[in-house]
Length: 343
Image (cartoon, rainbow, N blue to C red):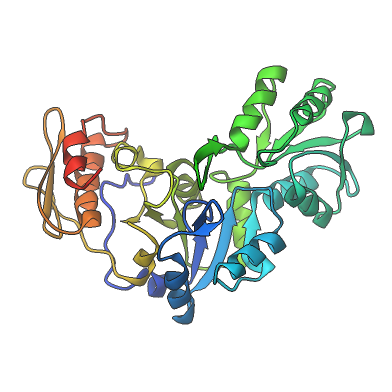
């Protein structure tokens, strides 16, 4: 039997921090952006932890080590140990170690986080295609990564060396806006070589496996800002998810989401961990109601009437759009409805 298609955000009569034992939190766009804490993140996470929820930080960014990430979070006012940070560098290092003998040389195209993760798995990072690598590992190297590193990857791959990538996020949010991510760098190597890497990061199973192995979570809640990594990763792992609207996903993308990109819950920011989630009631014929809002799918566009909290209006619209879209994304124009919510 196939998985049922989600047609509405779910309600919860309990605070999410009480209903789930562990929050698997993305970092960029959820907890911080450009190095600075996102509004309400520090206080919300402190309250969730004090109430008994375990916090783990799961990032596709392979640049920094878990120690560095934990230190940064602690500086922001979120006390964190390195063992509470899981990176795509760790996931790809485990994937490589499972397929190569111990001590194998790996050409690193990326930053220190990738080198540390490879060493943790008993692999030897090297810097040149002429160092006889048994694999190429590519992860986000930051804006200062030299162009020549891509050439080294291409030389090795052209010789038949297997290629692995920590993740393929095309973009990464920062203080000044959206910047190219590791997926953009992977595309450079793909275009030059015609090859495709094995990928470990969200939304693929190696990252979910790494996260569960390291956290031991029994009832996890994935918390993220990206539909194509965080939410799809939760879908692939068959766990629940909370989308927060502090990162790259906007209202139009959420309403047009196909089933694998539809979160269990939707909220404005991490304060959503501390509250229950209102039920969406109604049906396609009479309209979907949440809070003071009612949403419908018209012939050409989504329609919204009423008043109230913005997240409630968006939840009602999700129900109308996802029901209309069925097993595909909704193609109805959301512009006028979203404008009522300030988008």
